[in-house]
Image (cartoon, rainbow, N blue to C red; front, top):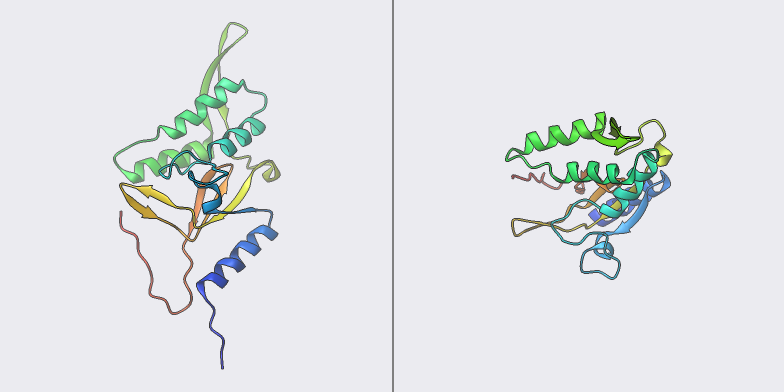
Length: 171
C-alpha cells in the first residue's frame, strides 16, 4: 500500500531543502507583530524592515546612511492603483538599483543603491518563512512559504499535495 504525502511533509521537506541551501528558517508566527520577537510592526507590513536596512547598508557600505534610508523609502512608497505597475516599478528598482542623490564635499552626487548583491550572493540575507500571515483589506492571507532576500518577500510558495485541486487567488 502506498503511503500518502501530506502538505505538512511537503512543507517540511521544502524548508529543509532551503536551509541546506543557506536559507535561515523562521516560523511566521514567531516573527509576527504580536509575537515576543516581531520583525514587523503590523500584519499589513510585508517588508522585514530591519533585515532590509541591515543588508542594504552592508551591500552599499560606501554610501551615506541617509541615502540608504532614502532608497528604502522609495521602495516603500511604490503605490500605483495598478498592481502590474507596482510590480514593474519594484522589478526595475530591484534589478537596476535605486537612483539616489546626495551632497558630498559641497557637490551634488548621484548613485545607485542596490537592494540585492547579485555579484556576491553571500552578502545577502536569505530567509524562508512559513505560515506568514498578511492582512490586506481585512482579508487574512497565509501563504505556505515566503522566501525573503534582504527582508524583501521575493517568492511566495503555495504547496499542495498531489491530486489536490489547484488554488487560484484573485485580487
